[in-house]
Image 1 (cartoon, one colour):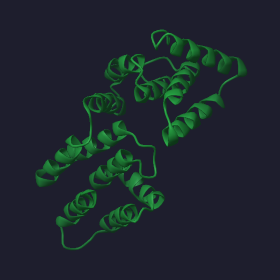
Image 2 (cartoon, rainbow, N blue to C red; image 1 turned 90 degrees about the vertical axis):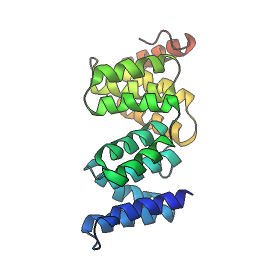
Image 3 (cartoon, helix red, strand yellow; image 1 turned 180 degrees about the horizontal axis):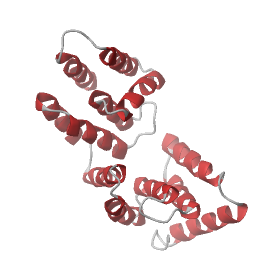
Image 4 (cartoon, rainbow, N blue to C red; image 1 turned 90 degrees about the horizontal axis):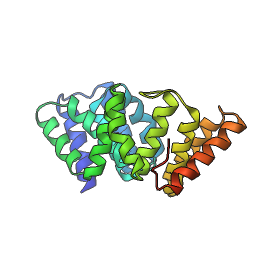
Length: 217
């Protein structure tokens, strides 16, 4: 079924013209790499195209996140990319993308995705209003994003200590590749911190966990 969906997306991508453009050819190489299980190549091709606004690459990047193909499985990012693709699409393509998108997430996934999309659009107040309560209820994906908001100073004062704390708490709940990814992000922040700041962040993380996420600030 999944291969059918991929081939359907490829058909949509090429359907607008009989002659493939350079972008069409690159896209097709990325999708073929995905089908063959060469996820590194698929990501190297599709991610830059998605970030440059290519809706077909955006939809397929959503699939990679949904399946954990070459990236940690992440329904929030999956829904986000599929949503962005659906926004850009028109006609039959739009209807197809909306159907694929809506087949993917749970209610919590959809809510998280709204928070992440608000962050991408620069609406940090909305992002915080959605993600902070979820983080305080123990949602590790929202916790990881809270770490990002503090690290970037997006809607909150820039604070590496709180950024480290939230990513540390999220990492404690995660498993497998997702845990490794969260730890890497946390440790990248730690490189910009003093020993005293790291100690404080760890103490805050322990307090956050001990309070069942009620005392995390």
